[in-house]
Image 1 (cartoon, rainbow, N blue to C red):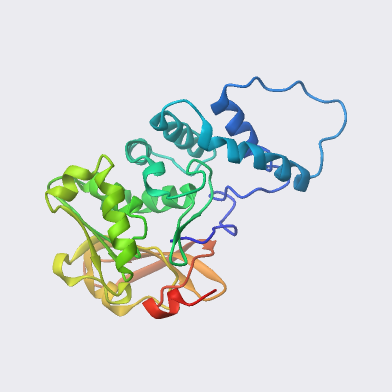
Image 2 (cartoon, rainbow, N blue to C red):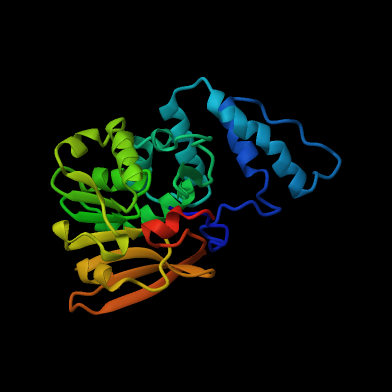
Length: 288
């Protein structure tokens, strides 16, 4: 449940710097089929003005007439163009699982986090792509994956599609209403048969403790920031497996945690990020 990834490394970040402020506008113009305007001889307006002028385009997204899956594919193409999606495996699963089914309100095809209720969010598409790219080798058919703080269920559904009917994907979330909503979302998606067969499941649980029933896991994704890596999650990571987790309080790093064959742990930082905290149910439900 990424709040924002505005501080991601240059190679991964899709934030709106002065040089990239017009990117969403060009992306949306392409989706709407509008011709590019003629180049103006006068200097372009400041970035803040460009951003303000983008807002009507963002609001128009919900009224587009082309098929939802076509718009979802256009979003993936955008993420490929700017380096967040780098492999066909990740592109294929993000095209298959339509993001709009997991966003209760707002514009699902904009590269931004969106609220899903209960002080939770669905991460921005570029952060989903980043985590899928980091975990893709550990989401092979037949493998087990755990999504901690599964929120809308989007990424858990992607995991399930990647590990297939021989594998197992588990999402855990400590707010029952969010779990119920995730199940409803997945039932409308391409991952619905896996949910029906019990190969994809969601559970009300404290993410800091993991979920032992389907452990050990080849891949663990944590969608909220922990002050330090929870030991139960390390214990439930299979030797040879990988965990992706944001770690820190105000300043956070997206850490890639690999468990070696001998059980030792290797950790590297992939990017600076900003996620909501991995906390208790009562703390999350408090007014921000």
